[in-house]
Length: 629
Ligand SMILES: Cc1ncc(C[n+]2csc(CCOP(=O)(O)OP(=O)(O)O)c2C)c(N)n1
Image (cartoon, rainbow, N blue to C red; front, side, top):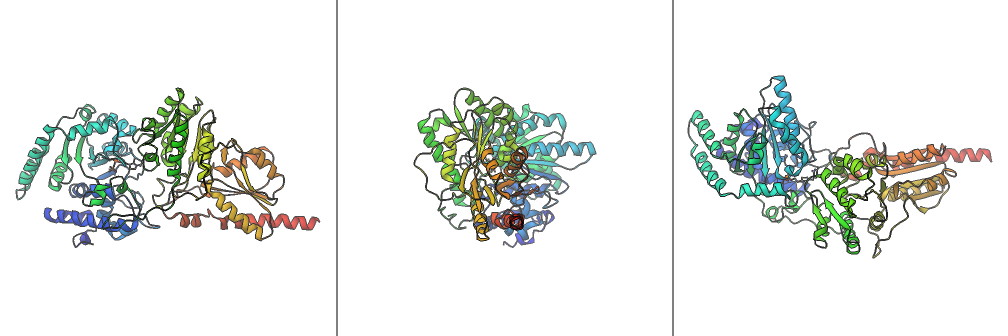
């Protein structure tokens, strides 16, 4: 750790440094980020881009009284370092350590938690209005990336800001990247501003003024700063039309310029937007060369940026290559992503069918309604959206897709616990939020071969359907050269048995098999079932086992409430069966970040827990049978 960084225990320590020390501190922070994240993984690129911006914010404002709302908050690592969490920074994203995003429970300096994009402006406006009502004086600053402006919520907030408050500072952190390159008209609009000659001239004169500031009296500095900031004024029609005074764009790595600009904006009595240009990955060549990869990644070599080669393919990759195959045969198949071409694997689809690939920006609601529109014209859209982000699109799924019985396929990557990212990213609610929607079919494959089959099956369904599959490596089974549709609503019985029926949803069939083995060692006969469909659920198979077994066990990587086990309970209740069901899944509780195995053990999403709960039921029937005979 650098000598200056060691002295920073709170923002007050930063404020004691002189300008040249703050510049040195920026270099130390970059080194700390590169070294620490090489071990823990994390959002390196976005954070390297906002070192100076965060230093400037904490120099000019006073948290926790003033409030910073970071959009997504994946770029808040420096904020964490400066606000008393340096000593725990090496624990970031580790079990029991700091979260990778802002958390209100983690620090009084984290005024607002996030993980999903597009919320900063609305939340900051809410805080500003609350301050105005209470007669407060504090400053509210929203920091949002350029890609956050591809999201509808940001525009809903923009539409509302000038009507609601006179004091709000929005910082647009423009690095021209989302995770992939930012897309769409807004991205092009920002680019036009940045490459405008007029701006370049103003920017240079502003920089020169700020550079001359050193050594003047405080009053002069303020006046000069005002002059500098004003000279940067470049009428940007869009933000001005929304009623925000636009400043910039300015170099987001020029500390004095940032500091003086923010000092000036602090005095403004109208909502303002400061357009700051930053470079994602600044200070680490591998991150500059590999913007996408270094947006967020696991451990890497801090010298070369090299990461361990991934041995086994991921579910995302199998999804994308299968979709390309399906699209080869069916020219109505189209692929839609909401700013996640890399994460969903659709990067691999794009070169095969560039005209049938659509990245709509961070706009999940739009993605779903756009898919609905295409489906009305005979296309078969596959919407690849992480389970957690599809939460955004609940109403479009109900109102636009299901109600009109349109054949849109929702491919829900990261269905299940996501691990290191934590509660904002776990995909633990999709079964509950989709199961109750009429017309919806919902599948979960036990392995990659079945994922491909389910995608082929989706094309045979005349209405909406969803497929949930987990993050990460596939099971490693042999895959058929061509996927084949499976019978809709039919479970797969992997092993027959008469004492207990164990249903393992998706890859949880592995746990079902393990439990069956243990119970068989105790002398019980266990059926192992791969349900395949949460909806329509296979009532016949459940009813059949309800006549013979002493208990059912359900395993799911989902909250128990409203999940697959609940669906089984509903069937049993409807057929008048009183066979008990041991449901294994996540409790009614937000699950923290951590390693998947550790969290499963902690919360009893395990074979052990199932065994503990089901054994007494099986032994009790055995005893009753012995007594009866
Ligand atoms: C609703 C939602 N969809 C997708 C994501 C995944 N995601 C995380 S960060 C990010 C890009 C953010 O880009 P930008 O806001 O420009 O910030 P930068 O990383 O470039 O600093 C995306 C798409 C998300 N967090 N939330």
